[in-house]
View: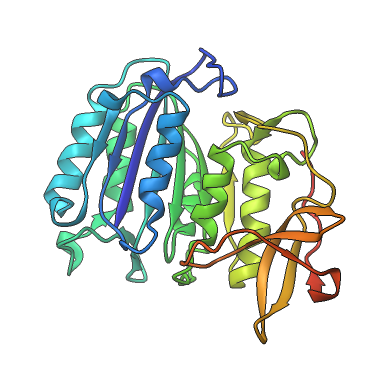
Length: 301
């Protein structure tokens, strides 16, 4: 199980972040997940490179990430927020839905009263968070429950949700969703659908949905409340797109067909980044004749 909590102010801009996010007022809270090429560590490093101070990083991992520890850490961190802060909550791990409610599973979670419920999270956000805007990001089974909650409205705060699946849907064990979110933190140019130099939340959500459908046949959910617009700037793009960059393709290699994303097309052939794999295989040059299928292009915002 993995949990990330970020607190950022509403207005100040930083060199590597588009307004309104400011790394100097960012906080993170984590809990454990698979140790194999785990993306939690990579995401922590990505936020650090964006300027998040070390003293604002709070890590709960493995046996330390108990139900009581998660609840108390979230409450304590929210209590330190100030008016004008923006919150980013990231979770990846096991998700559970009992037909009535959605739960995230701590290290010692085994039944309802030891699981971290959506009701507990959203209740704490509504009552303890002193800012106004919250971005919920979840990579787990039934994570679309958070998007459904945002859609219902009637909340004290303004919310946006990026989730890996529908509320009624289980999730694969691939890192597709978290990898794409990590690409967004790196400012990867292929996510910049309208080529304006900035990745908006809508652009990130659109690409998350496209990759989840192509690689895992899952329907990712993106939802915004009325006051948290999808066009909100998130991260500055690190460069303009290369030729053909961002195409989702299926590549024949080693006797199998693998999902991949085009990084570049050139005289050497097609440079592809392999999707949904734990091995973190390096980008590979392949021949155009190895490309067997393509996904529809992502829409711009």
